[in-house]
Image 1 (tube, rainbow, N blue to C red):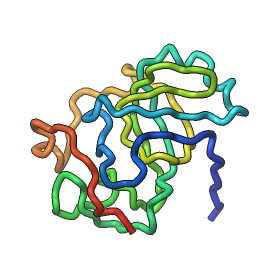
Image 2: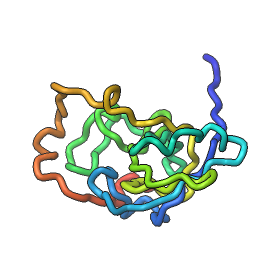
Image 3: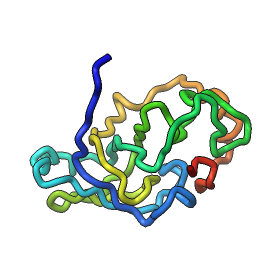
Image 4: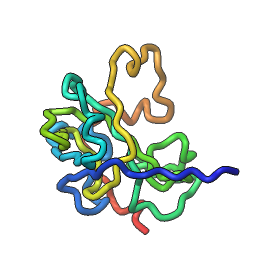
Length: 161
């Protein structure tokens, strides 16, 4: 099998210095702020990004050690398959977050609705496009009942080494 290697294009900065206390979804933590520092050699790729209200960040879960195919998500204590939850301990520790883009200054993106640990390596940025990214008639699986009245929830130590 071919080996896949990615080179980070930037680094994500937030006030969260460890996993514990990080919001489990940025949409539930609208006041959570951060900055995305795009390395200078990729700055030209930011052209026109400031026209979007939200962006998708793809990143490497650098604090994840190993993985488990069954795991307990933050919203309950029952185990689910790793591909049915958004836990960081995955076979390929790739994370994604939809964040609100507040402004672009040079090679730095000022964002809110952040749910990412400080120092996380950025792999890619994509614009959030409602026509493409919003689906109607969707199902939320085991989360359906858990999401009723959902409010801000912070990560605990369940995914610490």
